[in-house]
Length: 349
Image (cartoon, rainbow, N blue to C red; front, top):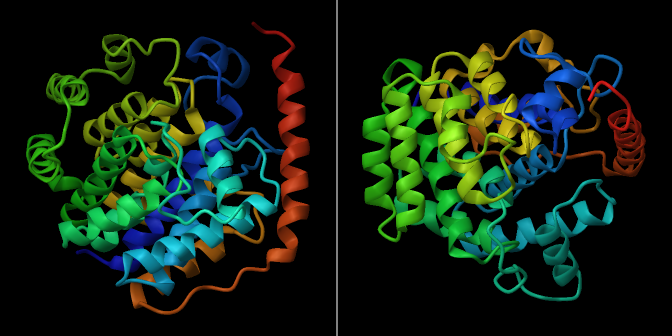
């Protein structure tokens, strides 16, 4: 692999900036999002010209911490991540998905990580799997064990596991090859070999992605072909094809990949976070536009995420986090969300 610390920082920071840029547009159609917040080039519009991150970034950080504690035992990794999710939930995060909320309640009620998930094909596991791909992609059996452990904590529908595995495999492909050697043909051949349980529905969507990459289509063209012209939903089989297209279509252009996917609307913080992770791992942290790193975040700041990446690269222990600040941060985040909710009630429509 190329410079591992730079690749891992690219994944974590790419997740954060894609999450922050997409957050104000979450749930909006492409047309309404453009009317409210403008077309690309994108800039932060969440809090006084700065961005804030949501559960997508927080879960990626929890995965990193659990990996640092247990890099060689999937069961222990799952237990560590389960405790991370419990305490994350106790901090009262805003905008938590229904399946993840139910799973966190079950974890607090004493369910084990193997039994806490609910039957859902939401995209939560996909936002947790890019780091696993970079760290463990060289060992496919170990990678699947870790991705499955992470997935089953919250989601038990096999579709959730397939989508999470695809993101992990894409992250490894980009991290090992770099932007000049990313190949849609090679990636999909590898993915189909690694996923013998790939169903016809998902395989058909992936073939559409492959065809649109070959034709150098726009992201909106693909969205129309997939029936997502009004926005990308939180369903795994909608999210994953779109983010794979953004990454494969513009592998060497971090900005373009993130902007094109976010502009499709819908669950734009999660789609932005996942394509940001893939593009960041492929291009490295240095490819992320400097102005996009202006995040109003603490204690999970840009500097803290860089240090977390450094520890992952060096195989060191978990990175301390000043957790007493989290409830205050979450209150500020909640108030900012309320302002955006009110703003959406006003024109332009």
